[in-house]
Amino acid sequence: MTAELHGRIGFELELLAPRGSSRRALADALAKRCGGQVRPVWHHDSEPALVSSLGGRFLHLTQGFQVFRGSGDLLCTLVDDVTIVADLDPAASAPPGWHRILTDDPRLLGLLAHVSDPGGPLDQALDNAAALWGVTPERIGHVWRIESGGATIALATPSGGERERPCEIVTPPLVTDHVAVLEELLGTAATLGFTVPREAAVHLHFDGALFRDPRVFANVVRLFGHWREPLRELIGTNANCRRLAALPAELLAAAEGSPTWEELRDAAARGGLGKFFDVNLTQLLHDKPERDTLEVRILPGTLDAGEAVERAALVEALLERCRDGSRFPMPPAALDAAVRELCANAGGPAERTGAAW
Image (tube, rainbow, N blue to C red):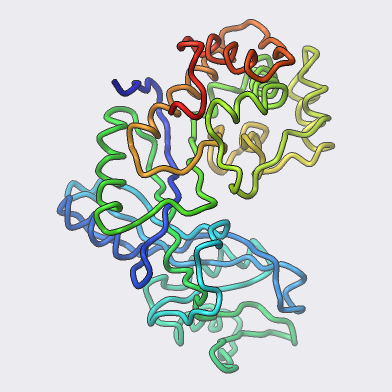
């Protein structure tokens, strides 16, 4: 019997379209299934830059798709994920209609996303932005560029390397019917031949307001810091998953006392806490969070809705244990014993391990 979830949880599920297909194909199939429609959107991300004028890294906009039900409610958003690379052909040319926009400043990225049409053609991608500077986009081979005062503002390029195939399904917060919604999404993807890529993960977003008590926050740090290996063993974390790191030692040390918010923020800053850790706590430490969630990033990829919800229920139970007011204990030295104790803290059978999910 599939476990039940009790809170508002958003899912991010990383898949890969079969060669010759794309996340747009899944968007169209989902919209057709629910009598809805598809709306192109820009997805924000970043990568190292090969263009020296972009300062060693670029921020980019890639093409994504929101799928709405016939009622007008958002079903999901389908976007690229730059961590998915192993099963792609880096030399593949971009299919017609697939492109991206690059810049080096987050303020420019927001402006470009606002004025550029994610559903428009490559040769017009920078026209609206160029008009703001009173310049004309310049074409260099397959790349379009706008400059001002000798500085590159943005580039628009074809999305080669099969970047149309990675497909991260992002759900809105789900309150009920978690399995049914995920089965609708993953079942449709499986029917179209989508698979789980080698680097795949499932990310969970929990309401951030539940974890803003410094005692609760410190418990979450203890759970994901001191219990890192038992937790990853129990969850079955994908060893090929990228952009995962252990929580900073400075934050772990602060969590061992009775820290204030100021002390936790200071420790997080000194330790370089960011998004790409086993658990993303950054939004909890902002007065005005962009997305007010605690994000758990260590679940393995799957096409099975029941598996996704089983693992999510385990994480939800452990986070509830963090909120019960008592200090989360230190783990036993032996891995097997630590896994059993984690199960006990989650209120589940002690014999469960990641391999059994």
